[in-house]
Image (tube, rainbow, N blue to C red; front, side, top):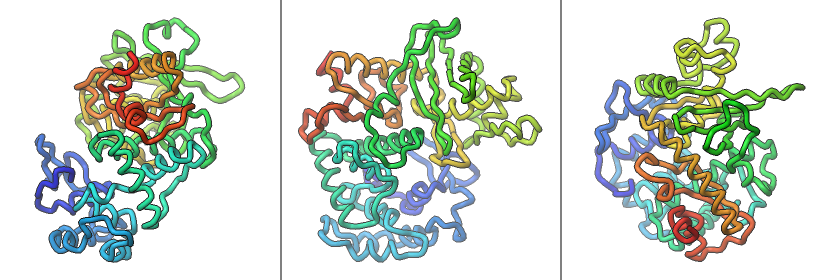
Length: 410
């Protein structure tokens, strides 16, 4: 899309990706990328599913005609083609805007709940945190002005700024859910994602800092994790109850290697960590069942399937399907040992606060291809807390480029 390279069935492929109906591997060959990775359409990609299948097909087959109807320069009023597409059954405003973006990505920025949430949170200085974007051309135009100002101030490609805002908005939503505070003011939520030091126990007396994370899904749970010099992963969590039990699990490199080999062979893999189903032997194949049956973990420890999903998603080792129910993960990289770089980044954030007094949030979802970078070079999205953020170039370097941040202060 960024390069506007021609590809047979381009819009259908992008539509399937946008609606979650494209997966790596599988029986079909819907698309093969430049690295030779094969993608196929899921069973949900059919005329009877509520994913706008027929509309995506029609646009794909009439790509040139649709492109001619889209204004090349941004119009003040809603384009007729946008109104026509959003009126299609099962399509709507967001997907129609995505079509315009597919043809003119720099003229029509991507628009969804996450980027809009980041936009409102930033401009309101934390007082607004909407859960859904307004389906309104005027509101979209306001977001577009904000977006273009960031692209210019940050001197970054538009798609990097979009990725940063998307990750920022998604992260804010996750934190709001974990706190159970709806759309209220987040206040000091920066502390939710900082490095925490836990009381030492024999298994915790190690060199690296602990990182605080929150599980995906409807019942978000806090936990702490780290990876030591021997590549043992440590996960600590507290259980509710009168005794407030704290449990720490050490996962050896051999266990992690076996788990990731399993993930590499199975595409999208469900959590499969239901306590009752594991106990009765009725649980389906998935991460929890693998931990229980193949690694010999207890049922309690097998609940860490979700925690591991978060940890490996942070560094781009796994990909999360984004669902609250029916959570699945798939492997993107075998380089799981690069988890240590996430811990290093958190430590650098602490150092940055000590030197500058500025509270910074790392948005870990943008740490793509972290295996090819060192901590100082990893590009992250972050928000400066406790100081006014204006749209000057210097501030955006702090907000969007961690390398510049480090170079300026260390």
